[in-house]
Each structure stands twice: as structure tokens, then as C-alpha cells.
Image (cartoon, rainbow, N blue to C red; front, side):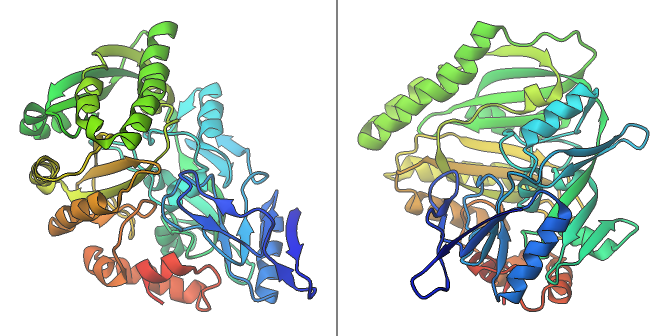
Length: 447
């Protein structure tokens, strides 16, 4: 196990020379110690050593959360060596993977075995444990988040012991830890339910805002995976419909795919955002051009090549999960807010769906859900826009994404989640001294 410390002049433990930063650059932490364990046993030993030294413990993935969920001034567990697929069980339809494994590596390995996750989010840079612990989701009429696809896990708890959890073994911990915010312990490995690899046909198409919101229930009902992006300052949207296909595979052409996914969605968009940050008055005009730049296209490929796409333009984000019935009204209010305000918004608003699930802290817990995500280019003032959008979302009973910016606290969240008390009771039992606590968890879960 690799350990990094810095020692101050008095002989005590000081801060590491290089602080930890998240992907967006809006969160910085200075841990007293970092470790990169390569096994569950090394991870458990590191937690025991931290407890002996009176240090709190947090695990970091690749830093794709916008909240300080992984921030600590104690022991920071890094994922670089806790990686790899541990077992593939085709008969059971499961794969067991170390917690620090990037989703990209998991998806590629599954594909090599002719297998796939049922659903996934739109980026592959996250670690598996970071993704599930913060509630990463894609879009789906019937298929839920990554955490809902877990069938088992190993959890290192506050005293360094290891719990094996499933619906049959430690079921109360399993129910909570599938989406646990890092509050119950450090996950060392996860077992996902998988299925034989299938093909998806993706249909991407521009559509006016009024049409997509007017037909929203129909579009969700008719498609296995539906989402859309609305470009603020315009009445334009880009829709995406992904449905299972008998094939044959027909991936995007090398050149056309590069133009859409790299040149337009990343390269040109990066330039447009930079220009907008320097000249905010230009943003509405840029938005009108950008919203017309992506053309309709249809292609068929294996799941991870359809669900995911590169995200190279850095931003900050807030996302709220709304009751499905409230989505269209909230979107109309958000559009009206942008039109009457002085906000200049260069990033599209992303809208996705999820079915109800049974995870206590899932944003889709107990209700069919629509996700509305607002973004701002990194370095652009976002606070006023996010605050105004948040007022709309909370008025409709919204639940904030655990890994994205929001201002909600434990009092609000306890009312928003019927099973909130179930989760905090498990936390009180497993971590009464808050070995895995930090300021963010104090705000969202209470002391």
C-alpha cells in the first residue's frame, strides 16, 4: 500500500504537498495523509491506522462530483490501485469489480465477455464506487441508476472490519450502502447485475421546446431511453431516443462521429463557452447558432458506445430530481426565468428520466422521476442562476443530486426522503463517531 505524508517542523503530520482537487476545480482539500491501497485488506488496515491516529477518512474517485463529498483534512483514500474485474459469472449474470475501477474499464471488459450493464450515465471517467455512492444515473423508462443495478458489495467500516452485504447478508446495510455518500464506510468491491450485450439504435433529432414539452409523456412512454437538451435563450432542443435493436450494428462514421462528438460538442463548444465568458452579451447569439449546429442522425452500436460520450468542456452543475408529473411545469418556469432575467447561459439544460426505485437515498426513491440539470462553464459566475433555478425545483418537491451543487440541508432532505431516517439509523450504528464524516455530510445528513 502506498502512503503519502508531509511532516511539519514539529514532527507532527502536516498537509500533503499537493492538495486534492475535483474535476471542475471548485473543490480543494488538504488531507493529512493519502493512501492508495491495492486490496480490501490494505484498505481495512489504512482505516484502522487512521482511527488510531484520530483521523477522519474519505475515499475519492476521479473527482467528478461538484460537491465536497470526498473532501477531508484526515486520511484520503485514492483509487488508483484498487482496480480490476475480480469475477465474471455468466450463469448468475453478475460481475464483481474493485471499487476504484473506472467505468470505462468495466464497460470494455464486459463487452469483451459479451456482457453489458442495463443502463448507465453519459460519462465513463468515474470510478464505479464514486458513481454509485453519489447516485449517478442515465435516462430510462424502466431501467434505473447504477446503484440500483448492484447485487452485492464489500464495505470497510469504521473499526476496519469488512462487511459483505447483499439482499440476504446484512440486508439493512446493503439497502443503505448501495447509495451511501461515503457515510457508512469505504466500499472495496461491488457486484453488478449484468446481461448479454445488446444493440441500441440511437436517434438524435432537433425539436422545438414547445413540441418536446408538449409531447413529453408520449416521448418517454414510447422510448426505452429518452432525454433532451434545451438551449437557453432559444426555443430549440436536441432530443435523443435510444432503443434496443436487432441490428445490424451501424456505428457513426469515423469522420461524421468525430465532427459531432469532438469538433462540435467539445472543440467548437469550448471556444463558444470561452467567448461567452469573456463577452457575456454574445451568449444568446452563440446559443442560437449552437442549437442549430447539431444535425439529426441515427446509428446502432453496443450500449456503452451509445449511452456515453466524451465531456471535455469543464463546467459546474446543479441537478434536481422532480416528480415526473411536475417536470413540464418546472421546465416552463425555468425557460420563463431565463427570458425575463439578465442571466446569460451558454450551457444547455439537460432533461432525463428514471423509474422509481427502492434505495433509501436514491433521488428516484419511491417515485417516477425527471431530472433537470443546469450547467455553467467553469469560471463563469453561476450562483445567482443556480439559486433561482433551485427555487423553482424545490417548489416542486425536488431532490438535489448528491454529487452536484445545491444548498439543501438535512432538515429539507429528511422531509424529501421518506426513508431518510432508515439511512441515518444505519449510519448511527456503523459510524457513531463519524469516522467517515465531513462538512458536507454534516450539512446533508445532520450531526
